[in-house]
Length: 461
Image (cartoon, rainbow, N blue to C red; front, side, top):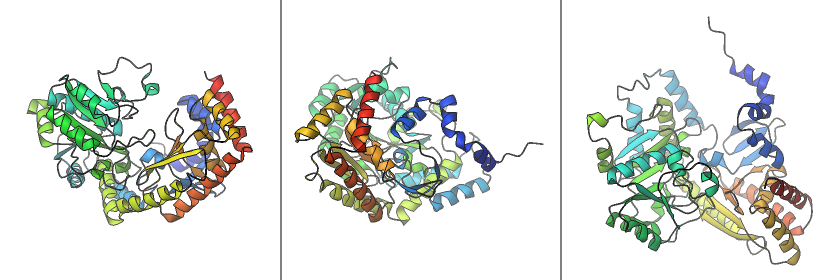
């Protein structure tokens, strides 16, 4: 007889070892980093846009698991859908039948992209990108995919080849023969297309690293250029999709933009079951799957599994029933305007930008001599340290979880659950204002922590 497995008892007995277990058996640098910056919290439970620790203190989540928790944590509709699909005991993943849930989820997804026809389901954002790269190359018969400087599309080898950050790429060569072009530079795009070997351009409608948007009209103009050269436009909506920017897809902010392939993931999971999807035009899919001999030429062992499909269907239902996209637009505009009003008040605050609930707060060189000296000290040690100095007291003093937008960037990115409202906006702005006041006072624990970060950065060189 199988010995009883008791998950609750296991967590009760071993949960306190969480950081030691990671240090011994997983990425040992993660607990080291968390200890260094004081992020080594022990969260006991979570719901919606909040965590709670063992003492009952609540923490506001402005990170949403890097965008995975679009509906917040443990949404009751998604939870019920997963209970229901488990209780149904479906004949899942037989590999040689056609279950209804994948078709139903594809149908619902495609209603938001009427110019697209078919969907491939994988297990993550990077898989969705890998699928798009393969499909673009095969459909066009060309080897090279263009990407934008500072882009992030994933960390598997194909996705890494279109990753614009050298820190992720270093040491993993050789990669695929892809080429970076500056975001928004149509002349650079045209020069590469004239070489005749370009399968497509992959682009984030709003770049996650730094929260950078292309200039108005760029996506439509790039699409026209690509199509004239028989190349494809690939929209990476893994983070920006499913309402994040106040439209269902971020590319929909620009009239006439109809990508040939669209990649989604993250929020489609409901925060429970990994899922990725690549949406595309009928002719592309029919070229890839051109005969019965090629029926499995691109597949995923866990793709289209019942739990992921049920979660995705529940997410789309909640988004429609609860007006999630409109809430992201309205709440995002409120948060952005409240933060933008602080730019003239704080000389270290350079710019607030973004769309919907994807907002970047950028810091820059101050005017006053005293602050400028401290800013220069941080920049000499490692660019990005000031943004980290802001993130840490937001968590430690105000119990607000945020993230630095990328390595060597003085930008904080806010990507909270799309369910947040005015209460969460008030709490974040109040906390951020307090941190900015401390930073501009020229003293206190914040700058002491800055000196600690400088020592750490110098030691790591």
